Image 1 (cartoon, one colour):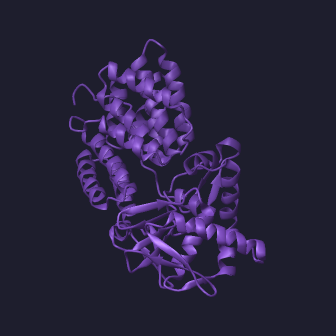
Image 2 (cartoon, one colour; image 1 turned 135 degrees about the vertical axis):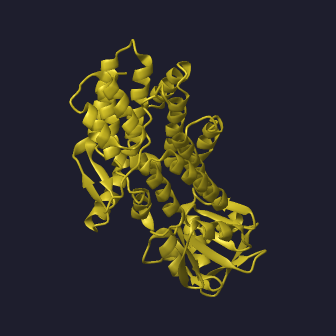
Image 3 (spheres, one colour; image 1 turned 90 degrees about the vertical axis):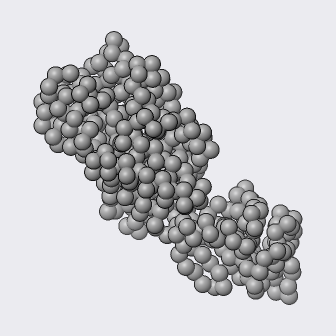
Length: 406
């Protein structure tokens, strides 16, 4: 590396993209293009960053596989930052293998972290956990250890292990402070904010209150019968019955849970479960069938008894029934929950993360945009959606290898 490339790499490693650009902004050789791409990514111009990194990969050519692999890893991180989740995992795996073969442990580990974070975003927590076990963060530099702990915290939060999440974030905070990269410190602070933001609503006795993630964990560990509208599951004392594939049964369970210890009129249950305002004899017959199915599904946790005007829920081994609901309900609420991370998402990435069709997600986005809750930029396939105002995104691009003097 010449002196300008070395100085630019040092500036990027210290979180100073403007300092890096001052040294390589007018150069078009492959190393300069790569460093310019990373700098633009850190400044938030992800479209320009992606284009520069692709140019750099082409400029390095097949005789420089290590440099090309680093460009691929950087480009994948740009895609992750812009919530483009459709990139092929095989490309990243090939780049990681190349990095490992050439002894670049830092970037190889970072490539695996990118895959784990993608798995977390699309809800494949088990796979993310298995992939993370293969990484030993001990020999890595502070910035990489901070990223490792952020991933550990992300998995713990999704597992509702708030104590483990807080411990991981504390370790990430120390590592980020040691790395002296302001953007990385900001990412840790953002994770702390997510941990301390209301994650659900508790509905009990006709009243609602917000719960932090720690409160949700405590509720599910309590002796209460919990009708969980976040995961479409009914919990009680460590046992759980999933109704995720039985939306009608869950609608009935939720209505009964919200009314407990009272009952719910048949016409109300028909409206909640079937979406019908007018109840005729066929609806009542169907209600009896569905209540029978619900009674069978919940037989170990609760009973469903008939009353003069409808039905009531009766827990078997607990004296309390509560409903746990998302902070925002409906299809729009699920989309808004993903956009709440402050990043820019494409409708296709949201559809992949939610497991819904892109057309359904697009309708929800249009509805939220009409209400002023989200905004978009770009056109066609480059269109992205976000919540206003948009917090800055922090990336930890590790394209430059450790310098010889480090």
